[in-house]
Length: 275
Image (cartoon, rainbow, N blue to C red; front, side, top):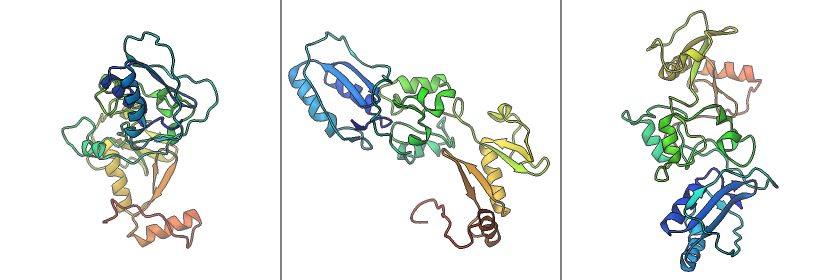
């Protein structure tokens, strides 16, 4: 029981059981994680000792209960489909900041997730904001509409991969995309490429807003708008962030007027604490 879903706990249990040559299964349910494991008595004791000691760093075990059962004769260890019945008492983690491994991939030009803004793994990414029901599985999140591509599915199925059973797993091929809409007739962002990935799904106009591009083009369009002193509404996981260039006094004042917030300090976004 505890914060044991969305932290890579089932993959951890799977690897630990296989390392100790134990058989059985693990599932998510509405109370937490349920495990049935059988094998040599000494290895079972080792499993019970190592389970809390080596659990994923972001996990928080509130209660660990166990009982001894007669052997069932399992032939291997598996992650089973979750059980959605019963009392809902499992803790859901908050969204987790991008981990060092995902950040390294983000800026690696040779990586297939190079500059893909929605990258994540079992150690980081959205959790609480995308959950719509328990237990925490992809069909119970806002990611259920994004079918995994073959490459992401292979990661999801590979026990050696850090995206093994990562529920929000995605990439530029199969996951959410970023697009930019700006005011003004036909304004286009610098570096625009016709036919960029995902453009077919975006309408040319939405009310007074004109489609400018996706992916890198969208990011550059947002940058250009900020440099012009405009207010940019960036849609995040749980809502919109209203952005301006903090060095532009006119833009900051315009944001204060729009928000009816004449004096209260505004949040400031920086790259890191050193900046």
